[in-house]
Image 1 (cartoon, rainbow, N blue to C red):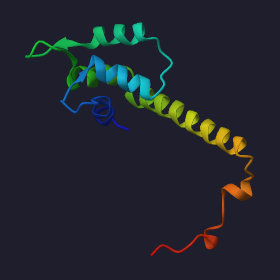
Image 2 (image 1 turned 45 degrees about the vertical axis):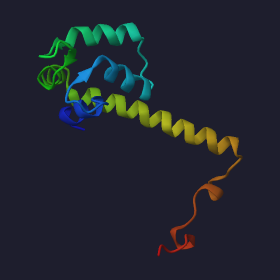
Image 3 (image 1 turned 90 degrees about the horizontal axis):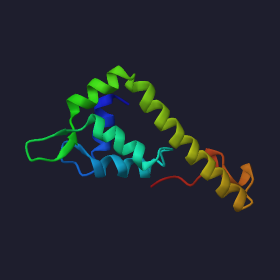
Length: 115
């Protein structure tokens, strides 16, 4: 994922900037292991006041900071944590339902043909 795509994914309300609610919303969705106060400190560090008087993180600030922090590595770490949580959740569902690998996966030949 590029830094630009990362920025767009943090812009939850799609208004072109990352606001406080956007940052906190994404952190909650990704179950990021950060305290709200840490997230707000980061937001306040990165945010500037836009023409309407809102505190926002602009794409320019985001790109500058991500480039300085190795954006690919940062985004990859966030995504790999999310992927691991999904894998663990799937494993829990399989265990809870007492499923075996044979019940979970089927050879493609046994799958019904799509119409």
